[in-house]
Figure (cartoon, helix red, strand yellow):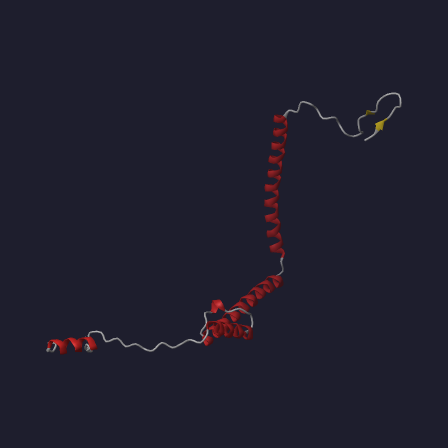
Length: 160
């Protein structure tokens, strides 16, 4: 800001060059219409650019050489083969260790085995449950208890 200072009169601030004074009455509706029109123009330009970008991508794809297309397919096939190999190793380790494959971490066989061993150690030793054979259809023979024997002896009879 530039100021003009006179010793005889109080300091007076003059207008700064290049800055217009703010108008007191602004037509907000006109301003809104102006910005709305700009937004519509920008949207129309964006839509026109979108179709142009799609056409450019189609042209670039058409201009790819046959060698580039083959290289892209080979790269995709190699990536798929690597994924399947990793999945196979994961399944193999999971089956051999008895661990769900989703719990294993690592990318190499050694890392997967170490992960499985850590899970087994965390789980602890599994105690084997004895095999229980049910005797369906056979009614078990009641074993006399000491109470039954006492009552029999007391009343002098047997159980019929």
